[in-house]
Length: 146
Ligand SMILES: [Zn+2]
Image (cartoon, rainbow, N blue to C red; front, side, top):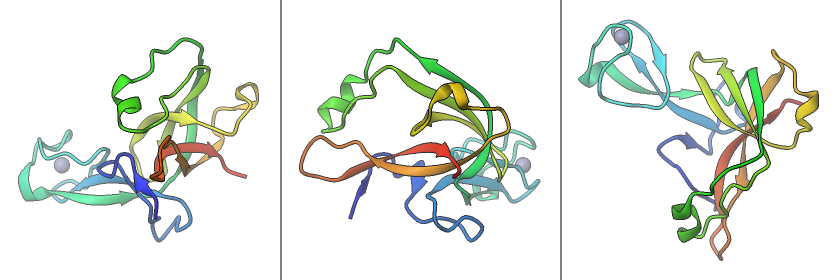
């Protein structure tokens, strides 16, 4: 069984609407219905409710590409390497994706020729191995829907 690098942010299980792609751990305000990511308990960004009004809400791992950029220079996260995780290495592609369930996220986009990316393109979540040791560690990425 793979170990999630950031289990507070996503889950291996999908949602009812998108069962085959990992879900993101967001939240929903029970008072006004606002959906947000990541899950937090500080208060609703729309109505200000806090406490029990902010409930966990699994976000489908699907969305639409709003913008993308290729990163050519990047200083890897030293903590990642210490935790048996392969640091992200430039060049890589970052995408701004509006999730179908509401929130907009910025994430690494993989398996893509960045010159072919188009605004409005459908994107799906995917877990990829990032471990360097014996443990199988996976992290969340997005990739164009096939
Ligand atoms: Zn609210």
